[in-house]
Amino acid sequence: VVPGRWESRAQPPRGLRRREKQAGMFLRIPGFDGFEVVLFIIEWLQYIVAANVIAVALARKGAGRMLVVCLIPLAVVGLIGAVTFGSREAAKERGFSLDKPSVRQAVEIYIEKGEGPNGENLEEILEQDKFAPTFGMEELSYLGRDLLWHTLLHLDAHNAENIPVAYNKGNDWFRATLGEPMIYTSGIYRNGNESLKEAQEYKLDYVAQAIDLKAEDNVLDIGCGWGRLLNHFATKYGAKVTGISLSEEQVKFGRELNKDVSDKVNILLHDFMTVDLKPKSFKKITSLEMAEHVGIKRYTSFLRKVHSLLADDGTLYFQVAGLRREWQYEDLCWGMFMGEHVFPGADASCNMGWVTQQLERAGFEVQRVSNLGSHYSRTLAQWLEEWQAHKSEMVEKYGLRSFRRWEVFLRWSVRVARQGSSTVFMITATKHGQEPARLDAQRRLAPQL
Image 1: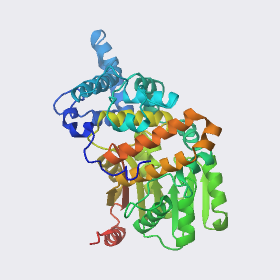
Image 2 (image 1 turned 120 degrees about the horizontal axis):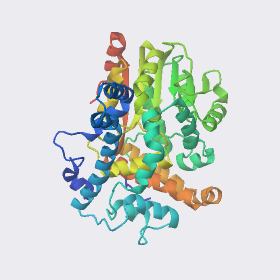
Image 3 (image 1 turned 180 degrees about the vertical axis):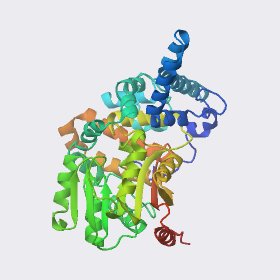
Image 4 (image 1 turned 180 degrees about the horizontal axis):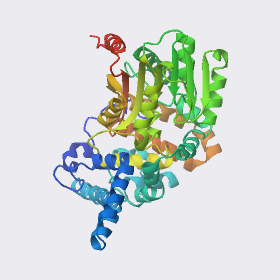
């Protein structure tokens, strides 16, 4: 890994220099916002369908009724067509040759052969802007057979299917990626020279400070991973912590990690959306990069359940990976690759405005939010170093194609987090209308000069 590659380059990539040409490529209709339209359709689909059914019943027989029946499918097909056409038009305006493979096709060739279409290494494929980020057959195939249905429906059964695929690869796989901390979320870097362990420990202390963690506080960690945060909160701060995960491998590892503090740590193997917990029983609640799996359709109901479990004077720390509001086509291409190969069903990576709106809709007041995508890029670069250092044993056990696919995920993510395609939001919130909690949070979280 090139040292410091998470930092800004002297010249921004071609896609960022000319991003104004891409803005508005989505159907080129003044005032039309494709991102908002997609979010609206997914979030309110059941009501849209109900309204459509009523409209069909009221419409006269003939062409008018047929048009109403086809309205929703036509809207979905139109949006997909607009993205496909728009990505190609944007690529041409930015000087890409459409005779070459797309960036997605180029990385797929790399995964198969260990080099790009013309012998390029992975760095050249991703960083030299040789291949256009167009929406093609790879994206359309994944959208049609999987993503569209998961996004529109997002049932409990989908979570039960997707989480094991994402997190039960084997703890040796994740140790070869995450290193000794075994923390699958962004670290925080004070000077950029920290080791992975130092950055993750600083992040854990940052979370503890954000929620004003104290001894004997009853804490819930939703999506607790391998249990490192639980262990840190119990051993360093003396808190009583309950963790929830749907991954059997994570729960097994976490229980072993926390066996010496089992009187303070309880890990549940359960879907948070269906687990039965006492209302208002937790003084502090944390959720670090788990909510992406909840789905856009169920995001508000998820947050309302979190709200119901939090004590009135409690604090929520909510860390989520999200996308930038002024999206570019590379963001979509990367996101589709991630959904297919890394995080199936994690369709709720959205912009900061949407996330905070959902929190407020669920009854929270945001007290502090930080955007630390560049820190995520640094974390991913260190994960990539770990992965490449363990190449021989990973290839021997899992094969070259699996190794390269994970390498693409890590290296491409270094780029997208650096340039802002994807980022991480670190949010601290209290319940709306709870004045003591609000005042305490604003006193504690006030910027320090």
